[in-house]
Image (tube, rainbow, N blue to C red):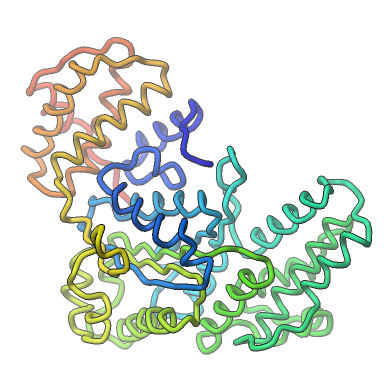
Length: 430
């Protein structure tokens, strides 16, 4: 579905990497190396075999030092999820989503939902709960032979409308249920020629978790209580269950990427304890089916486990110390620092050659470029030392190198490699 790189994709990746040498978001899987065997196992066990589709849930904890490829891993797994019709939500933990706040978690997840792309197309850059509902409606109408702009006859509209008006028993939060149903009815009206009103905008913002109280929301949809820390996780469960049970979405991949923000909370603080409690809640309630069909993933550096998680035995025990392997696909702990750094960097170099070659219509001399990769890698190690942190530096410097070589490719010497690394400082990551 979304696996063959074209010239536009390649050019986009080149521009992104030349600007900032971090995982290029939805394009990450095109240059992924070293973890494909892990991704294969996760895809086969949870996505392809239908574990999520049948309501089974799981939690994965991805650990790796800065530069080890945690974000790359997340986005590459997201591409596997899309290929199997799984909805994704990738959240950066930080100022916009402090993990100590259930409300912040709810708002970040609901506003990050991304439906699987259509065959042969890139994922939509617009995200959010309303995007999922709109995507489902358009797909449903298309299957009924109704294209954009065509009149929707009552025989088609009424059965769809019934999905958003029928009573749903057992929902964790009735307000969230009314909200998601109201979005469905509102967007169905839009597909049938209606207009998007101020009240509709308030409705979407309310379901996204904004603190909105309005007479129109209360009288029109019965929505009176905005999301808060006390009801946020129950609202998330309600929305996910509705999307699964009523709209037929097969499953959800929800990832939290802590990046370098391991010191988000002062050690032992109330906020830190609350963040741990929230993580425990997700793990525990996932294991008993409260979040049906959801793969939760949290990615952080070893410091987070050593300095924080180790102080909370319940969480430490649930993550465990046995690392994920082909024979243990259900193990939560995925350790990226076990990867062979030199081997991975060389493979990254080969991938970058493919991408730049595709983007610039260049046929590289493999013998020359193999030697150049080795020399630049040695220069990185001489200046930055040994460890996963050199991967990011290598990507940036090798991209600059390839950008400058173009069709005038040639073999460099060790002095030129050192000069390349020394004269091109890495951009500061925000």
